[in-house]
Length: 280
Image 1: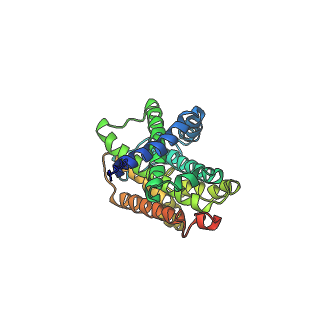
Image 2: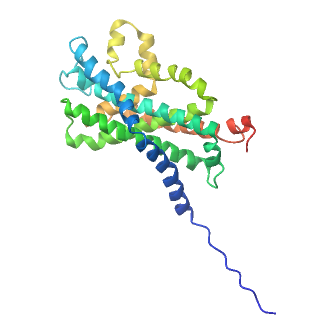
């Protein structure tokens, strides 16, 4: 009897498989952003209003003492820049959360999660896509701030970019985690009001924390110290001056990991929304 030769096609290697998934997920996020040019403008309207209008109106109201990382008195608009960079990342992280909720309702997220790839990789790629979009928008805002006279030494830019990327990752991971618990698009706006505004205003984004201590609002000071957004802003603030804030970086990295793990747990079909929806 003549032997029959069976030819099999080798499955793509894991690195190639991951590269294709990375291109699909991250490329989809960036492509959708590029197809919506007004999205960049809407993302920059809020921080630009604060930067242009409020920095002029409150120029002589807020005095910034000589505290680290500052070695001399600075203009209020200079103080605001790290906080407004954080605002850009915060709103983009919440926008990514809304995108996840929408994809889940439309079924796109279900299709992604049924792909032959570990959920950790898929969610990690979604996180990377959101981080890339945040950093791009933050760089644009930084260029606008530079045009308005906020100078940053070129030697400090690499450290600042790393701090921006880590802060954006933290807030994107927070948005990813929130997308687990926001069940419907109708509930998204209310949930965000309880996240965005407290995180932003109870932080040193617009005023130094010693102002809270000076006014006797110690409970607000404690809340600000426990606010992850506070530490994302402080990491960028110190990086602008070529300094490293150990506490801020530790909080940013630990909280990023915790938020991502909680998001991964929520998208586990044995525990999270997929099981509650009856899917598999």
